[in-house]
Image (tube, rainbow, N blue to C red; front, top):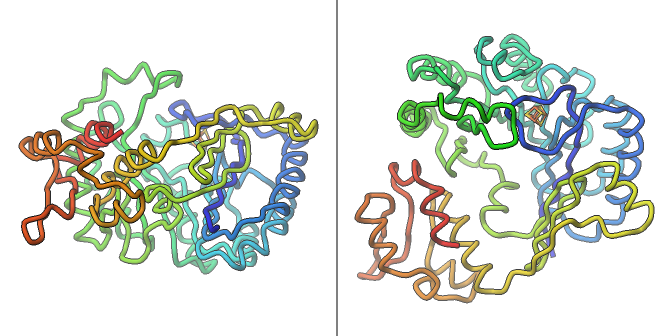
Length: 370
Ligand code: SF4
């Protein structure tokens, strides 16, 4: 069985006020113990790995000696897998770390740029400024990375469409092949929840529509709700998630999907390490999906991609006839609202995909498939 491997590095220099990923402040002693432990777990992996994604948290808070230890343990896997990504933050990305990543076969770098506007970066509580963000992109290119991705955030309280347009235009001129654009979430439980009411849905929708129309003109084609890339530079790792593939997540809070079972590791690094030491179960959530639920989830994930749902592919992957899983009447409703398109061949529906308007209401549509 081949699958994707995700490794969570749950440390950050400082917590960003909008972030709801699991991470804690950097603690060297804990990091040493964690990397040792991860290395042992990695050596025991008995699957064929197609993609590796080292994420977080902030993998680049680890010192070179710890990164080397982790990459040493991963080296056999990295040699055989097709896409190896590391997430990096501009303020902690050094030449030494870049060379290390290249030498160990990481072939994709995902930079947490978030913005190249200093006021926005300050508001977001980021530790880098625009100069450092641009330097990180240039240095990654110089170090030999061809597949560079940047993460961006838009839709901050008071941010105007005009400013966003000029920012994204500048970003599109950088030597990057992939752009992930996320609107500011302001999730409950984060310090930014209080800003939720100050964000104009209309303004954010305008920015999103601009992304969808402008980025393809610059060669970045949309292939998922928030993701745009040059042809052949789509993230294979993320495509595997959206195509219902299997994946293994290592580290606290990491999720796995293995042979129809969904698992989530406990989101507490000390407890995670303790349970591993005591040879106890560190899974905090476990659910075996029955075939019908699996098929519905597959539909809900596929509709988020630009290609949408291919009815024949759906049958081949899930064993279900798509129209037995999803009522035609509901599809017609979405179609009448202009959210989806049904493409027909010989008068038979063979593809269902979101329209431009549909991408704006993607969560609403995809939740109907579950
Ligand atoms: S650096 Fe990334 S993972 Fe860490 S707190 Fe900020 S957004 Fe979250």
